[in-house]
Length: 530
View 1 (cartoon, one colour):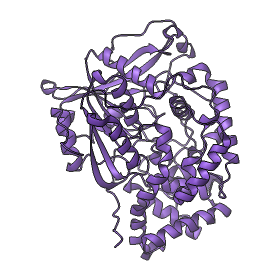
View 2: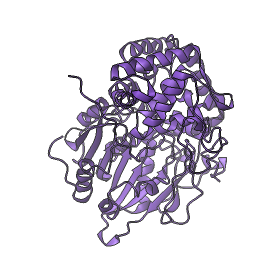
View 3: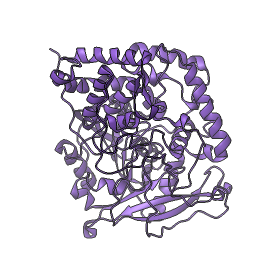
View 4: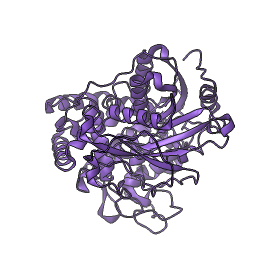
């Protein structure tokens, strides 16, 4: 008997993330308010820049001043808007500081860069257990205000026991930023996923990837080659030193789990308790992206069940199989006859595929998918929300793209042969048709002007048993198979709690998550078995 797939409960743990896809390419980015829920407040209508609040001069990249060893806390800079146009409210208790660190740890004389660091102190200092560094998805997104976001998510017992520490990783936001100077056309939201042409041809993807790599190198200079997960781990350990603590606890989500893996491997003796929520495969973002197809196939049935339950009104299929057939029919239809949207935009087949992949991350997005699919099916757009037109930018901020690509391309060496990607894309299309070959396709890394300066950091069993992994069984972005590989790589060091759930990011309101999470952070006790 075919199991019934129930839609996941809405969660609030998601952050925009190129690795995690999800909210960054939620349908509002592609379609505007015509298919989105009515907005409750006006949002920016112009292109956003993650570095718009940064006052650091470009000379900060080459200054010869020495790194700092202390933090001076004060007021925070203006909040950095996220790539989806949303600002999370900043808690008034949040404090900020800056920290100078080496730009190039292999060549300390190359000067310093500045990191923006934040802190929210526990409301119960008498029972404080330490500092908990919190890192969201990415790479490329700001983490400075992540402590404020987590105040409404994490269990009270944890919040009462730890100071929350956030930071903008090197290259991002209010830390010394990196820029590629890409055109708005090359930062279109739908291009963040390299879907091939409808027939599987990747000629256009190759041209796009080379253009991005060439433009980034010409604009950003050598700083582009210094941005990597390993260097961010070194930065995090400098933050630990500046905090004056011998060990640091850590909570990472999505890409933040890979930074956590690298930190716990490079600085095992400096870690107290490490929690990884929705874990990236041990090979990093490159391997994680390659698992998108598998994660999509495992997560799609929950969306299909949601749409099938509303077939009386949506007419998209009364069974999961029928909804799946509708998906392929609509994608093919939009490949040849894109849907015309407001402001001269269109939704083509690849935009539809990216939209659907995005909404798989969270059940709260399923109603958005229902409206988008229905519009694609009928050709009739629903009425726009208040104010009409789009309320969100249609381009990803340049700083986000630059930092994202720098980390992904500098972490691991990507093959340079275009034929490799053509073969991999074709194989992926056949194995995981929902993704149409996207996970196997080329990224700018194939043409990147900088080669990794050190071998990739791989998780291993050397170190204390102090890592808790939390994972949904059906995750479109960080597939369960990748998390299992990371668990195996850490060996005795880690234990994993797997939830019978669909979506990206575990639900901390679920006792099956909250109880082991709280017990671990308060006592250091890991589950006896996975």
